[in-house]
Amino acid sequence: MKRFCAKPPESIAEFCLVRMGIEARGFSGFLYTARLGRKIDRSSADAIAAGSGLLVSERIRMGFSKYGYLQYWKSFDSLEAWTRTSPHVDWWRDAAERIRTRGDISIYHEAYLVDRNRCESIYLNMGKRVGLATFGELCEPVGAATAARDRLGRRESRSTTRTDESE
Image 1 (cartoon, rainbow, N blue to C red):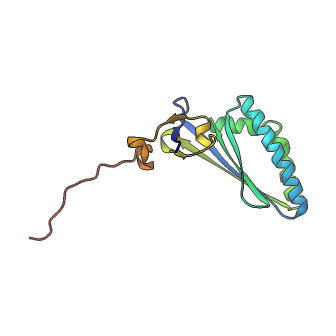
Image 2 (image 1 turned 90 degrees about the horizontal axis):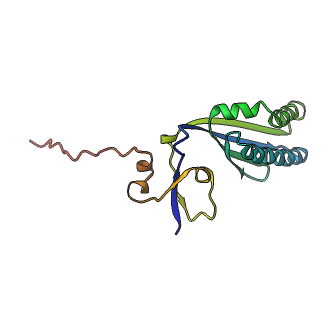
């Protein structure tokens, strides 16, 4: 079995993880979200190629009418700068208008700032690299890297002292 773990590169002290979801309500919403997904996929690929700070973007299917994205950004500043440019502002305004006028789609967006020392990963038998492993430093899960607690540096020394209450 192929196994490895990954951690953010030393050059990244804190990265921004974005979780976004899009849901269609009805057939017209489904058609719209399919087009919107292609636009997001294309603009994400362009953002990565341009070196804008987007490290990886993964589309995740969450059911027939709902899908989402996990995106890893080099920093919140790079995410924020990108959101103020085309094509993001164009499709975001279009989607917001669609929600206001038709209500046949829903969107949510969450952003998390992650300290490089506060995340851990392990990959078992993966055919291709995903998430943190696409841009992070790979390591072998041996010794202290075999448990999530240890990969996070959270191993506490366990006291072996026993109190004897029977006197």
